[in-house]
Image 1 (tube, rainbow, N blue to C red):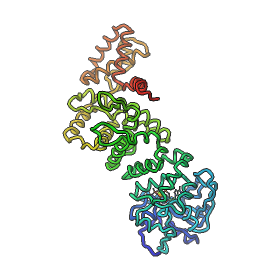
Image 2: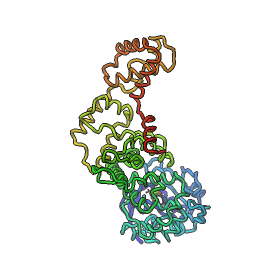
Image 3: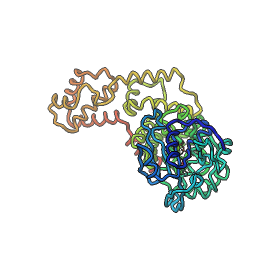
Image 4: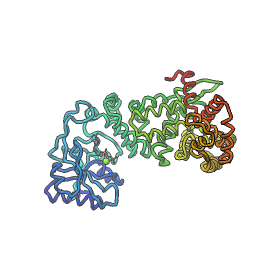
Amino acid sequence: MKHKFEIPEEVKNISQSLNDAGFENYLVGGCVRDLVIEKKPKDWDIATNATPEEIIKIFPKTFYENEYGTVGVVNESAMDDSLKTVEVTPFRLESGYSDFRRPDKVTWGKTILDDLARRDFTMNALAYDIRKEELFDPFKGQEDIKKKLIRTVGKPEDRFGEDALRMFRALRFASELNFAIEHETQIAITKQAELLGHISRERVRDEFIKIMMSDAPALALELAARLGILKFISPELEKGIGVEQNKAHAYTVWEHLLRSLNHAAKKNFPLYVRLAAFFHDVAKPHTKAWKNNQWTFYGHEVVGARLVRAVLTDLRFPKEIIEKTVKLVRWHMFFSDIEEITLSAVRRIVRNVGTDLIWNLIDVRTADRIGTGRPKETPYRLRKYKSMIEEVLRDPISVKQLDINGADVMKLTGVTPGPHIGFILEILLSEVLENPALNSREYLEKKVGELCALKSEELVRLGKLARIKNEDKEEKEVEKIKKEYKVQ
Ligand code: ATP
Ligand code: MG
């Protein structure tokens, strides 16, 4: 069928070179779908009847290092990142999926129809011939795009049986495109959910990240819960379903987390903030207890930090994302009572969550409030928080920022290297956290003199106390909560 799309010059040129060398070639996959939807494609893929070796011969700069025959054609001068490499792949034909996740062998197909037939959804099984300006649509993808429907190419049971990850891909596209999943396809997911147990955690993670980064992540996650595949992201999430909270919360734990996440997505927050918004109350089901005529969730942020670390580690998230998310979950309960916040309390929060994450913590808090159905903090309160944070950001919050260091302490006192030096610095920091004006060389030297006059046991005792006060009390709290609520 004739169809005119705007194609970037870089892509046209690659296609032209393949034509000149006598090879058939088509735009395929996500980029054709996006052209039909009138959305800017993220990347450009070409399928051809040339072999990898033949493709490599045609272009000056390529790379080829994968088992699928994909050759990356490099456009060094392209301004747009999405055009810097264009992937050119021989027509493929796949056969035999004995482990539910990848074809036993990849073989080259003869025709574009072979190649489209192995693709996951009808909307992703379109091909565009640039030279002839013709759209090739053997599985009625355009019709489904018009209806905003995700439907597998062929029988859904068969297609999910070949590669179970396609179930998560269906949900991911639903969230990214705001499409519905066709009924039979949904039923097939509920029937074959267990096959996802064969899929590597990395592949699940990649789809989960795309869901999280979409505009409406709650759509996919709600579907995941309804179709029984949420547990393959994490069984911990399922535990929040139907868990009621107190009157102040209109929503169950699960609903609240979805709403918080959707707000974070609406604000276009980065991945780790979205993850924190989604997991911040994940431990509420574990810590729920009836006390003084109401439900309490004492320590849920401490247990939650542990749980989210375990969940993200299991999904093989990069360490940096895990650390940031864990901190945001751990400290999301920071000062709820504005009248009582002191600058030293703010200083401790900044110290615990870190100067790089403090503003993200405010964002998690906002998402949390909106997710509860409460309005945003009043502009006055927010301004007040922010000004207090700005103020303490100028203050010393770690031993490193003291106006004196370990070497100075040793010189002053003649104490040899060892734990005593650390304890002295910790005691100095606890004073400076209360009152930053004390961070002067003169005062600190005087204080060091006093501390040195103490008996060794007394210094150790004060040092340990200061450390507990300065650091988060995570270990102690966790022990207590574990005992109280029998969490492992
Ligand atoms: P995006 O715009 O997010 O990149 P996409 O549709 O291009 O979306 P990709 O994961 O990049 O998605 O895959 C490119 C194309 O390859 C898809 O459009 C689809 O035709 C095909 N494809 C990818 N993964 C699978 C799979 N597991 N099974 C079948 N076909 C797949
Ligand atoms: Mg793509």
